[in-house]
Amino acid sequence: MKNSLEKIKTLFAHQKVCIAYLTAGDGGAERTINAALALIEGGVHLLELGIPFSDPIADGSVIQQATARALQGGTHLKQVLEIVQALRKKTDIPLILFSYYNPILAASTSFDFFKEASEAGADGLLIVDCPFEESYAVQQKCGEHQLAFIHVVTPSTSMERLAIINKHAQGFLYYACRKGTTGVRSGLPDDFSQKIAALKSEASLPVVVGFGISDHATAQQVLGAADGVVVGSLFVKVLAEGADAKKLKALAKTIFTSTNVPLVEMVEELRSLENQRRHHLKIISNLKSQQDN
Image 1: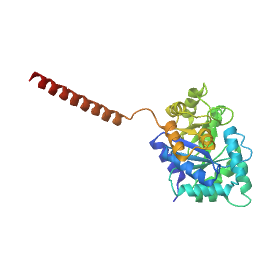
Image 2: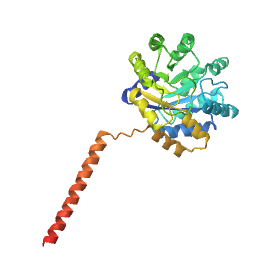
Image 3: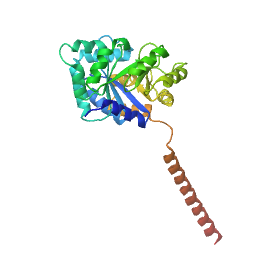
Image 4: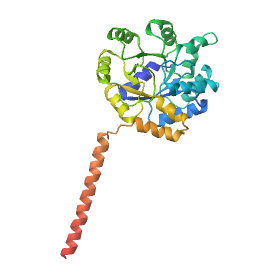
């Protein structure tokens, strides 16, 4: 029996989680699938697939343009679910659908989106423009079909409101760490450390951080304070510029791989260096003996 909540819980219990976002259908379904698999090979633990929408008010120009290309290419909601289904045959990582409410609401007149999303293999749903107070129907449908309903919090979310959201949230909390839209930026807001500490003190679920994370240093800084990091616009941008799967995989490794050498590897390296040192000393000793004779 499918248990998306348990899958997500297990993932966060064992590691800091590296998350990538792609706009579904940008460049076609096959390109999205290949890009997703490349990112997974590059170290991505959880994937967000954006459902194209004509008015993505929370997104900056990079994802706006990607959404426009996907729509112009004929991408529709059922095709996004076909992409999910194709990916589910190739990977077990959690797949989260990232959407605005309008496409889902419009689809409700022709098919049961929540049922079909679950059957395709999606593990969760994040609706960026569905406030908690208006999300009861969505929560019910997600519950019926084993989809984690992911809530978004922001720097302006009060502790009182966070406490309410925390009682109903599932999977993880998505912290949009800066005001404004998504995009490729450098660094973090000045108050990031203070905000994430306050959020973590109240949250009972893992907290992931997104919006504007686009380089290794920033991603590692986020992972030092949060449970996961989301990189989206950067991957969407390089795909639009023509990056192939090999380049995308390498970029993911560059962004997500820690520069800290694991202790076991460090010990092995020190042992190797010590063995080399002893070998060299033995050679020097033998040469001296030969010279003395």
